Amino acid sequence: MINQLNKIIFSKNINFVVLTLLFLAFTLSRSFMGLYLFGFRIGEYLIAFAFLIFISFVFINISGNKSYNLPTSFRYVLLIFFLYFLINVFISDSNILSPYTFKTSTYIWTISFLFFGANSKKITLSKNNLIFLEIICISVFFSNIFGYPEVLIEFFQTYSDKYELHKGSDLALFFIISTILISKNLNYSDLGFKFIIINSSLFLPLFLYKSRAAFIGVSVYIIYELIIYFKKIKLFSFKNFLLLIFSMVLLTYSTIQSQTKVVPEEVSADIIKNSYSTLGKYKFKHYQEEYPLLYFEDGRVFSGDGNLNWRLDMWQDEIEFVNNANKLFTGIGYKEKFTVFLVPTWNDGTNNRLGLDGLNEQIHNYFLTVFLRGGIIHLALLFYIYYYFLRLAFIKKDFSFIIFTLSILFISSFDSSMENSHFPLIYYYFFGNHFFNNTTISKSKEK
Image (cartoon, rainbow, N blue to C red; front, side, top):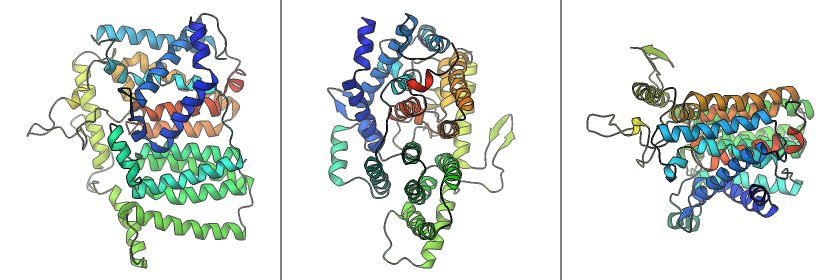
């Protein structure tokens, strides 16, 4: 029965359907994943599918099936993940049949898409495919500036639980994966360089407008890519000089649009100058210059930056709540929201951590979420998973994977990206499919 499940999960038809859904989530983000189908959202179906893959991976491989081409020790790590989840459900009095239990434990099940990607046909794109991808990149940029067409907005407002453009973290994942596909499939050619420069000029101001963490993570990856291009192509040429001028025009246009969302009737030198300075000030408008970026006071860590201080305050409060409940080692489980979202933060009884729509329940830190939900055991297991793959990447000198992973993890350390449905599924699928496809993983000497 289990082997039959394995054949179904990894069939060509299932792979095509899942890849299509991930592509639509890749381009349409949260709005697409919230579409209802027979009473459940597409994101919920994909998480359920991820759970099946997880169970299949753990029990099929332990029973002797070697189709995943991964070392036995790694499979047992996932088994411990699952067993401690069951233990934690019991000790935290969580309901194993409640959808909320699986909603708050998605950080476990989404890992399985790493293996799904690694055992699926590796994605390769032709030149025409890559041109189409570049068109999509430009379309995503303009949709984040001007919004979706009205007909698409009405569709999502009618059939989805939420209409939402790409968050900064979503855009960062989209940009980095697109960059990798363009560079690798075009073998770091002149055409690939043109695409990367154009995309960087368009997206960088938008990243700064949406998320500084995304801006930093993407910038690091762009620098890595440019270093490779400088070694591969003739940099100093008349064509590249024209490209540089064109990129400056795009950069200026994006800077103006990222804050105004409307094309000025007359673009003057003053507008351009003010746009660059205003965009920078926007992301630091909550910074209190009389305080340093980080400082200690009364046994707590604070920041002169309002956005970072909001996170630091929330993180430290929740750690204190969990510690007072004597659950810092075991984790709080999956029964309810974090306490910081249940208690008032202002004297009028309101909570400033719930977001503009009052629905936020994520603490904007991937590793802290894993630690607080699953305790030190789950956090240690997650660290082992990344240690294993990063070590393998260092051995193979795959620096693209190292920069890719560290950039995404940095962004997720200040965002709720890994706690939604689309971001980790896309991330882990690409993680496995592009960098550790089964033909690559099987070369590992570890048993």
